[in-house]
Amino acid sequence: MKQEDVDWMHGKVWSMVYYVDEEHDNLLKAASSELFSANYLNPLAFKSLHRMEQEVVHMTAQMLHGDEHSVGVMSTGGTESILLAALSYVQRARKLHPKITKPEVVAPATIHPAFDKAALFFGFQLRKAPVDENQCVILSDFEELINENTILITVSAPSYPNGVMDPVEAVSKIALRHQLPFHVDACIGGFMLPWVEKLGYEIPPWDYRVPGVTSISADVHKFGYAAKGASVLTYKNMDFLHYQFVVTTDFPGGIYISPTLLGTRAGGPIAAAWAGMKHMGEKGYMSMAKRLMDGAQKLRTELPSITGISIVGNPCMNIISYTTINNDPDIFVIADQLEEKGWMIDRQQFPDCIHLTILPINVDMIDQYLIDLKKAVVFAREHHEATAKGNASFYGLMARIPFRGMVEDSVKKVMEEMYGADETSETKGIENNDDEIIQIPAWMRILNRFLSAWTRWKKSFGSKK
Ligand SMILES: Cc1ncc(COP(=O)(O)O)c(C=O)c1O
Image 1 (cartoon, rainbow, N blue to C red):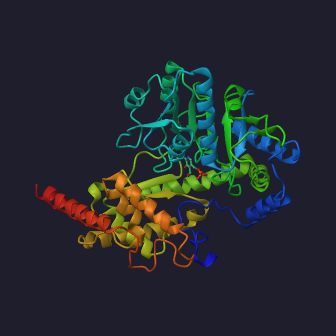
Image 2 (cartoon, rainbow, N blue to C red; image 1 turned 90 degrees about the vertical axis):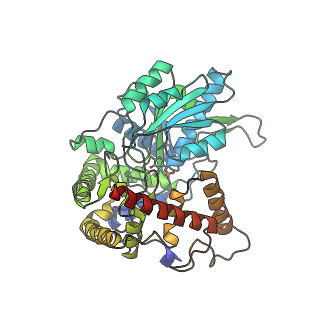
Image 3 (cartoon, helix red, strand yellow; image 1 turned 60 degrees about the vertical axis):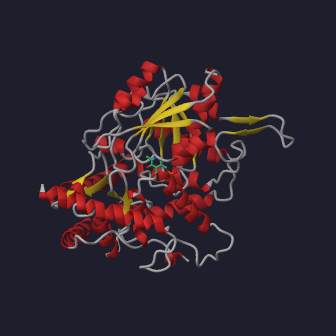
């Protein structure tokens, strides 16, 4: 079955798998299998896992410049850490501000969708502030969204789409001024920025050194190089964490306590995270960060030297997205061309662009990527009539459709088909062959054609002017 999976091993996938090498993988597997039958439902029963969890939390808090009051838990990933933080702050508001019946959380438009999920699960409204052309949140708009119902403010360090750092220090001042708790989502940056800073890159303050920050999420299963299923949620102190604990006292099965979202908790990812962190150590993390930042620097220099290509915003670490100036040539035609060369492309929207998270496995492939990109740009310039095509352009296509409600309905239809009872596993999925689109609604394709024609018309009108 794995033959059908995306081939990340050869460095052509710029997201998802944070592979170091075979030796490191074997260590993670060994640690994981030591505790794979354990159940961390009961921390008293598995003292080994409790010790490992607390050591991982402690090491992470130190890395984030927490102090002797820092506390935290391990969760299964960035999304769970964000859900848990949201839960704590909702519970805190219920307790301290019972008059708030319609809680709200304020975040930049680039915040990770885990917060939309949290809003849905825990019943608050997520109010998103716009970002400027550099993908940085507009502070005045951000502060304007705060009102008497606000229970939390949050930003990213950095945001996933473009690797841009939100202004944590300035937002901290807003948090202190309004006496609000402040969560920093460092799920992707948490295990990278401390080393990038130590390497000498200029990273604006974003962790517990900033006084208003009350919690930080950082994923060990990303640049902590752990096995999948491991993130750390830290809080400034127990005043915040304790709102997360659930205790049921009238369950006939006994008094039930739960510190995180799940009941039964797998021991494997905790053991692998602990072993991975101990094995990497500061020395290992520093040398990996250097390798990744050298790769990122090469891309930061080379990408803008390709005529028409520009980097989105001012990325702070090894996440870079790029686009074409005035969408000339069409960035998604370039994406199609790269895909034909075997690269997996993450298409993004607002603006239309291509995302790269530079992972250890990508570094040796950067030169080849740049060669293929240059060819793709030449093709797109010479084939102005080309529009993004094929099933792979599904996401790119959706990015251009202005009616988001219709896009949501269409995507849900695709999911219903993927998870439907009447399909066999062999016929499930978006694609059936390279050229045919089977589940993209006709209206979406027609609208896309219209929008592409409109963009071309605008371009040629603009050039005549
Ligand atoms: C900034 C940020 N927050 C949260 C998440 C969610 O993490 P996960 O996919 O582990 O749930 C991600 C994932 O890429 C992220 O980049």
